[in-house]
Image (cartoon, rainbow, N blue to C red; front, side):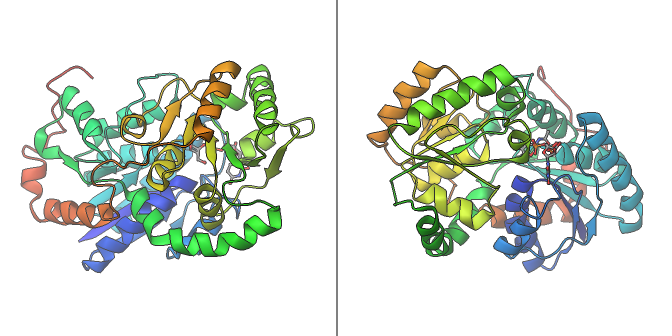
Length: 374
Ligand code: UD1
């Protein structure tokens, strides 16, 4: 019973770890394929080191490029690799271009396709990740949803009930497994940066809609400068924004290189507030009980707002400022059901059962049948 797990970008590695290990613990032959979408040491290797994730069996060297270029290169490389491996199933994670490439190639190869993090919807078609999410779910046989709202989205789109499995959130598995170690290692990092626990805010920005337009970026940086007058901010910068930062850092904002998993988790765990446009950080702050302000107009993870510590604040300075001052007063810690550190186990159980009874998963050999509107 061979399963290929496809990963390519930072958040994929964090999600793949608990699934790869739970499958291997059940005696499954797992082939880990790294597309190479992220390739710098601090965007890729550091995650394997920090998470103690075993090295990939194949690295495809896809690299950066436009969406079509990156996705196409990953598809071509995967299409060449898959026949020699003859997998029964291919597992893809999240919503990055490597996820899309993996799902499309796998679906056409005849292998079963499983999507970890199925059913998330921002309903914002301008987000490339939203297109990836919808297409990946459409070609997947098994839809592994992190929460009940994600499963409801899938039902509303007409997926068959047998395809949908609410398994919890795999990022939370990885967080729970590492948070104590991160806090320990983090003491040194905080000391080196001259930061006290709860004495700073943490910022990340990398979404094209926030960093690609110079006017939008300049306005966000100005806002950060205003906030930093009240609370120092640290900002580990993704290469996408570093390339676009022309002037000096805003006053009171400390720019850092991209951080590894443990260092970043340590900074999150001791932050007073987090400002971000990332998806995963909305979830991690919820589990850590840290207030999170999401600098976007929509989220594919609304459960972090309704059952977590997240607030959507968009890009407007006065809205961000008001939410920031409220967040400094604290937030009620709460966590969605099944975000309990056991999602990897549940996923492995579902995947193994599906491979043993393929006829049930794909009753007619036909693709999933939609009963509703996409
Ligand atoms: C990708 C995902 C995004 C995810 C993010 C996590 C897609 C469409 N987007 O965005 O959903 O939140 O990863 O980090 O898949 N670069 C480097 N070194 C690297 C990787 C990238 O310098 O190792 C630079 C390159 O200039 C590249 C740019 O970052 O063009 C963007 O990288 P890319 O993988 O295309 O998208 P991300 O913005 O990282």
